[in-house]
Length: 291
Image: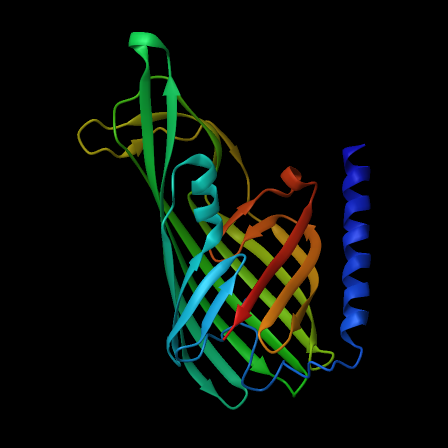
């Protein structure tokens, strides 16, 4: 039953995407805005230009210089409002080479947060905390085959470290936390019009260390290092996603919409959610303005 519902949702999303793409092919009085200088920023080697600002649903960015932008992802902040535990994050991306048809970039980010569990009651009430640091490293290349078609390829390594603040007993952690993960990705971009671009994104994890979803945590009282973490794990090696989508770009506003099959990759953070959690539906969505 659940698989049937998931397949129906996937079909509806694909139909909506195709319909949106057809709408975007119509002549537009807005006139714009996929141009030679204005390139796709996500899943590519391109970055914001000097003093250019991006305000969006999923990320906020600013072009420090033409070859360097700084970004913060909004999802950790939104979750912080809900869970009352913010996860500050920053990413620096540099397009260090952009000549003729080829662009190359490198980026590094950091996300810091904390998980907390309260156990017992009354006088036996204890609070056990684990602070984590996530560091994604990314290399990307973009090739402009012609005025309409471009290809984008890249690799991302994500490292995670957890530190405990006390010596817990029988402390159980729930949730998915990838320790180390290598991701390869590629995207085909086809500009159907000045407003609409079709994208086809493929993501694959050739290697990942164990992802903890349920574990008894043991913390070294002297160093605070987390030890004895793995009890029940997901095997995420060979996780993948295939996502067709569209990017609509006007003078200021931009919409990115896509839905595919596979695992759900958290772009920018370098983490992923197993496909079984979302019935193997892998979405892409962002709404933002550039000015």
